[in-house]
Amino acid sequence: MVLSEYTDGELGASYVSEDPRASSVPQIVQCLSYWDSLTKDGKLPCWGSFDWMKVPLDIIPYCGVVDVRTDPLDFIYRFWGTAHATAMKQELTGKSVKEMRPASECQSVFGQYKATYIAGKPQLFVNTIHWISEVRDMKEHSLRLPFSEDGESIDQILAFSDMRQDLEHLSTAFRKASYSPKPN
Image (cartoon, rainbow, N blue to C red):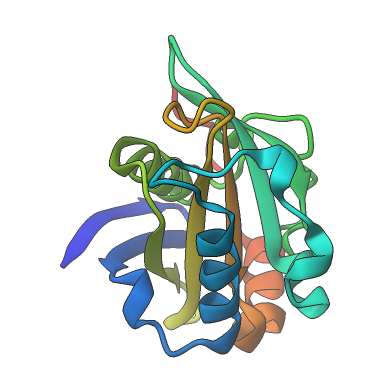
Protein backbone atom coordinates (compact mmCIF):
# COMPACT_ATOMS: atom_id res chain seq x y z
CA MET A 1 0.00 0.00 0.00
CA VAL A 2 1.43 3.40 -0.99
CA LEU A 3 1.40 5.64 2.05
CA SER A 4 2.65 8.78 0.37
CA GLU A 5 3.91 10.02 -2.96
CA TYR A 6 5.66 13.33 -3.67
CA THR A 7 7.13 14.97 -6.76
CA ASP A 8 9.48 17.93 -6.88
CA GLY A 9 11.19 18.94 -10.10
CA GLU A 10 13.69 16.26 -11.10
CA LEU A 11 12.96 13.80 -8.29
CA GLY A 12 9.89 12.15 -6.86
CA ALA A 13 9.59 9.96 -3.79
CA SER A 14 7.09 7.40 -2.60
CA TYR A 15 7.06 4.77 0.10
CA VAL A 16 5.14 1.76 1.31
CA SER A 17 5.14 0.32 4.78
CA GLU A 18 6.12 -3.30 5.37
CA ASP A 19 6.35 -5.54 8.41
CA PRO A 20 9.91 -5.09 9.72
CA ARG A 21 9.82 -8.57 11.24
CA ALA A 22 9.24 -10.10 7.80
CA SER A 23 12.31 -8.46 6.23
CA SER A 24 14.82 -10.70 4.49
CA VAL A 25 17.56 -8.03 4.48
CA PRO A 26 20.19 -9.46 6.87
CA GLN A 27 21.30 -6.07 8.23
CA ILE A 28 17.68 -5.08 8.97
CA VAL A 29 17.16 -8.37 10.78
CA GLN A 30 20.38 -7.77 12.80
CA CYS A 31 19.45 -4.19 13.72
CA LEU A 32 15.93 -5.16 14.74
CA SER A 33 17.23 -8.09 16.79
CA TYR A 34 19.68 -5.81 18.59
CA TRP A 35 16.93 -3.24 19.27
CA ASP A 36 14.72 -6.06 20.63
CA SER A 37 17.53 -7.10 22.99
CA LEU A 38 17.51 -3.58 24.49
CA THR A 39 13.78 -3.54 25.30
CA LYS A 40 12.76 -4.31 28.88
CA ASP A 41 9.27 -5.20 30.12
CA GLY A 42 7.68 -4.04 26.87
CA LYS A 43 9.18 -0.55 27.25
CA LEU A 44 11.09 1.23 24.51
CA PRO A 45 14.87 1.16 24.98
CA CYS A 46 16.71 4.35 25.92
CA TRP A 47 19.25 5.84 23.53
CA GLY A 48 21.92 5.65 26.24
CA SER A 49 21.80 1.84 26.05
CA PHE A 50 22.58 1.79 22.33
CA ASP A 51 26.10 0.64 21.37
CA TRP A 52 27.26 1.27 17.79
CA MET A 53 29.65 -1.68 18.12
CA LYS A 54 26.66 -4.05 18.30
CA VAL A 55 25.46 -3.28 14.77
CA PRO A 56 27.29 -4.30 11.59
CA LEU A 57 30.02 -1.69 11.13
CA ASP A 58 29.53 -1.55 7.37
CA ILE A 59 26.01 -0.14 7.77
CA ILE A 60 26.90 2.81 10.03
CA PRO A 61 27.43 5.15 7.04
CA TYR A 62 23.83 4.32 6.05
CA CYS A 63 22.39 5.25 9.44
CA GLY A 64 20.89 8.43 10.78
CA VAL A 65 19.69 9.37 14.25
CA VAL A 66 17.17 12.10 14.94
CA ASP A 67 16.17 13.81 18.17
CA VAL A 68 12.40 14.18 18.36
CA ARG A 69 10.99 17.63 19.10
CA THR A 70 7.32 18.22 19.84
CA ASP A 71 5.12 21.29 19.64
CA PRO A 72 5.58 21.53 16.72
CA LEU A 73 6.70 18.05 15.74
CA ASP A 74 10.17 18.03 14.20
CA PHE A 75 13.14 15.70 13.84
CA ILE A 76 16.69 17.05 14.22
CA TYR A 77 19.62 14.97 12.98
CA ARG A 78 22.16 14.22 15.69
CA PHE A 79 23.91 11.81 13.31
CA TRP A 80 23.85 11.82 9.51
CA GLY A 81 25.85 8.93 8.03
CA THR A 82 28.46 9.57 5.37
CA ALA A 83 26.58 7.48 2.76
CA HIS A 84 23.63 9.87 3.14
CA ALA A 85 25.91 12.87 2.68
CA THR A 86 27.48 11.26 -0.39
CA ALA A 87 24.19 10.20 -1.99
CA MET A 88 22.16 13.31 -1.20
CA LYS A 89 24.93 15.90 -1.59
CA GLN A 90 24.11 17.57 1.73
CA GLU A 91 25.14 17.51 5.37
CA LEU A 92 22.26 17.51 7.84
CA THR A 93 23.91 16.87 11.21
CA GLY A 94 22.35 19.36 13.63
CA LYS A 95 19.61 20.28 11.14
CA SER A 96 15.93 19.52 10.86
CA VAL A 97 14.61 16.90 8.47
CA LYS A 98 12.60 19.85 7.10
CA GLU A 99 15.87 21.27 5.70
CA MET A 100 16.43 18.23 3.48
CA ARG A 101 16.31 18.83 -0.26
CA PRO A 102 14.59 18.27 -2.54
CA ALA A 103 11.16 18.89 -1.05
CA SER A 104 9.85 15.52 -2.26
CA GLU A 105 12.50 13.65 -0.26
CA CYS A 106 11.99 15.95 2.74
CA GLN A 107 8.26 15.22 2.80
CA SER A 108 8.80 11.48 2.37
CA VAL A 109 11.39 11.19 5.14
CA PHE A 110 9.43 13.45 7.50
CA GLY A 111 6.35 11.29 6.90
CA GLN A 112 8.27 8.14 7.79
CA TYR A 113 9.67 9.60 11.01
CA LYS A 114 6.20 10.87 11.93
CA ALA A 115 4.66 7.43 11.26
CA THR A 116 7.31 5.84 13.50
CA TYR A 117 6.71 8.43 16.21
CA ILE A 118 2.95 7.81 16.11
CA ALA A 119 3.26 4.00 15.97
CA GLY A 120 5.75 3.91 18.85
CA LYS A 121 7.39 0.77 17.48
CA PRO A 122 9.85 -0.23 14.75
CA GLN A 123 8.77 0.57 11.21
CA LEU A 124 10.09 -0.54 7.83
CA PHE A 125 9.53 1.49 4.69
CA VAL A 126 10.40 0.61 1.13
CA ASN A 127 11.24 3.91 -0.53
CA THR A 128 11.27 4.55 -4.24
CA ILE A 129 13.08 7.62 -5.51
CA HIS A 130 11.87 8.46 -9.00
CA TRP A 131 14.48 10.13 -11.23
CA ILE A 132 12.06 11.67 -13.68
CA SER A 133 14.31 12.75 -16.60
CA GLU A 134 16.18 9.44 -16.60
CA VAL A 135 12.97 7.39 -16.17
CA ARG A 136 14.71 5.46 -13.42
CA ASP A 137 13.45 4.28 -10.05
CA MET A 138 15.85 3.64 -7.18
CA LYS A 139 14.95 1.66 -4.07
CA GLU A 140 15.95 1.76 -0.45
CA HIS A 141 14.69 -0.08 2.61
CA SER A 142 14.53 2.13 5.70
CA LEU A 143 14.24 0.60 9.15
CA ARG A 144 13.26 3.16 11.79
CA LEU A 145 13.74 2.26 15.47
CA PRO A 146 12.31 4.42 18.30
CA PHE A 147 14.12 5.10 21.59
CA SER A 148 12.82 6.63 24.82
CA GLU A 149 14.37 7.91 28.03
CA ASP A 150 11.23 7.10 30.04
CA GLY A 151 10.31 3.93 28.12
CA GLU A 152 7.24 5.52 26.53
CA SER A 153 7.79 9.00 25.03
CA ILE A 154 9.93 8.77 21.91
CA ASP A 155 13.05 10.96 22.14
CA GLN A 156 15.23 9.55 19.35
CA ILE A 157 14.76 7.45 16.24
CA LEU A 158 17.57 5.49 14.61
CA ALA A 159 17.23 4.80 10.90
CA PHE A 160 19.16 2.36 8.76
CA SER A 161 18.52 3.10 5.09
CA ASP A 162 19.79 0.33 2.85
CA MET A 163 20.52 2.24 -0.35
CA ARG A 164 23.68 0.32 -1.19
CA GLN A 165 22.27 -1.14 -4.41
CA ASP A 166 21.50 2.28 -5.93
CA LEU A 167 24.04 4.50 -4.15
CA GLU A 168 25.84 5.60 -7.32
CA HIS A 169 22.60 6.39 -9.18
CA LEU A 170 21.15 8.21 -6.17
CA SER A 171 24.28 10.33 -5.93
CA THR A 172 24.05 11.30 -9.60
CA ALA A 173 20.31 11.98 -9.40
CA PHE A 174 20.60 14.22 -6.34
CA ARG A 175 23.52 16.09 -7.90
CA LYS A 176 21.57 16.75 -11.11
CA ALA A 177 18.24 17.46 -9.44
CA SER A 178 16.94 21.00 -9.56
CA TYR A 179 15.83 21.78 -6.04
CA SER A 180 12.61 23.57 -5.34
CA PRO A 181 12.03 25.71 -2.26
CA LYS A 182 11.55 23.76 0.96
CA PRO A 183 7.97 23.10 2.11
CA ASN A 184 6.65 25.04 5.10
